[in-house]
Each structure stands twice: as C-alpha cells, then as structure tokens.
Length: 328
Image (cartoon, rainbow, N blue to C red; front, side, top):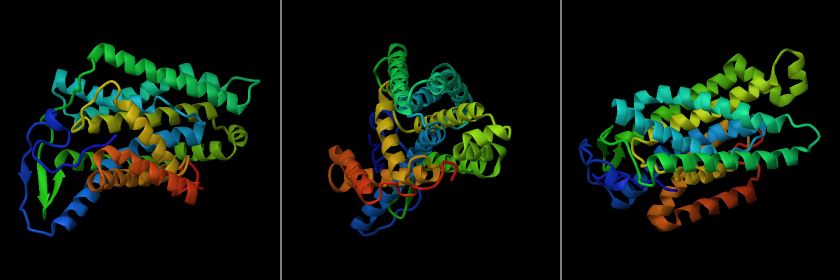
C-alpha cells in the first residue's frame, strides 16, 4: 500500500479529494534537489501514521504476545468512523478523534475479553499452540470486520472531503495541510503513549508484568488487567490513526489488508515489542515507499520496502532498536 505523493492540486488520493489551495511563495530550485526533498518530506509525513498504528501492534505483541491479524481492519474501522461522523453530523475528523478513540478502546476491550483472553488462559497446551489459536481467531475477526463493512458500505471508496484542503508551498516543496496536521497528531499521540509507558503506574505495571508476571502478581499487579488495557490501547491507536488518515486517504472494506502488511513489516524492522522502534521504523517505511515510487516505479514500491525488510533481517535481525523492552 502506498499513499501517493502530493504535488498537484487534485490532492494525494485522486478524484475523491477536492481541489486544494496552494499557499506560500514559490521559489526556483534545482529540480533534482526539490524532488528529493519532496520525496523525503512526503515519506516522513505518512510514515508518522504508519508508526502510530504499528506501535499499537507492537505494544500488543510485546505485552500479551498476541499476533493480531485484525490490526489493519481496526484502522479501517477508524477511517469509516471518521467518514460516518463527518457525513451524519458534519464532525471534522480532528474532533471525531475523541469519540473514535473511545469507541476503539471499548471495542478492543470487548475483543480481548470475548476472544483473545480465552487463548491466554487455556491450560494444558503449549505457547506455540496457543499462538496458533490466536492467529486463527484474529484472522477470523479480520474476515468478519471486512465482510460486515462490505455489506454496510459496499465496495466503493469513501472519503472525508473538504477538510484541511490547503497545500503549502515551502521553497518549491509541496506539503498538504491534511498530511501535516495528521503527522503532528500522530506525533502528539505517540508522545503521550511514551510518557504513559515511562511515567505512570500503568507503565510501571507493564514493565513489571513483562519482566516477571508471577512476581508482579505477588506485589498486587493484575496481569489480566494489564493485558486487557494494553490490547485496548493498541486498538485505540489504530482508531486514531484511521480517523486522521480519512482526511486524505479513501477507504474501502479491504483497505486494512495493506495496512496490516505495513504494520508487520514496521514492527519487525523496529524490533519486536519496542514501541519507539516501531514509530522510527514507520518513518523509515514511509520514506522507502516514497523513494521507490518516485525513483523506480509506483508498482514496485512494496518491492523496495520488502528488500529493505530483508536487509534489516539479515544485518540486524533484532530490529533497528531491538533489545529494549516493550515499554521503551
């Protein structure tokens, strides 16, 4: 999956986004340098959202060891939530982040308690067998979500139109307002997540549970509650990312499949269970996609991403920031 570079007034997502207003003075620069800077900036802006929803996946895996195959579909749900709030109540996705985040958290809690927790509490089976059950169940959730969305909304792409339509011209480099605001929101939300993991009792409980679950239980930490909250927070991050993505990216019921692949690649490249590594890797993934699309071919953008993925596995299999704990 690739989010196209913004260089023209029609916008980054083709015909579904209204014509944008270009603001700021233009300046003559070397076209090669301008193209390179444009590519890097576009990659970083979209990479912030990649990093945000991927940090949710790595948070879930780092704490619960659950591999969530429905993670991309929860991003899709966040996007449809933004579309519905805008279409029915005229609520901007920037404001809709709050209800979408709350609903995503509650939905994650329900999925954990009804489905995921059962695979963690089964006695008499190995951890490998338990993970196999988790894979099958989360894949079933993914299929269920995509098919329900297909029945409700149909296969046609939908988008939030007319929100943050401007494009800033910064010395010949075009920066879409929607992308810039989305990146800033992703940065703020990730910063809050990091502070929560490092400075709050919730973060201390996570570190204690990850280090030694039995010892954490002895000092009053309930591992089941830690798992439930962590899973729900991970899903909440997908809702936030999906909500702001809807400002410039069309959504269909199957959009989540592409985001799932990106999330898995990002998590492994950043280091399994490391939220900081996931966010940094998200920025790198966005840049790699843009560079490949601009300098090689759009159709080969994922090829470039997977080549970089293989190189990371060969040269640094623990990931870019691997070796740290999930709360790092």
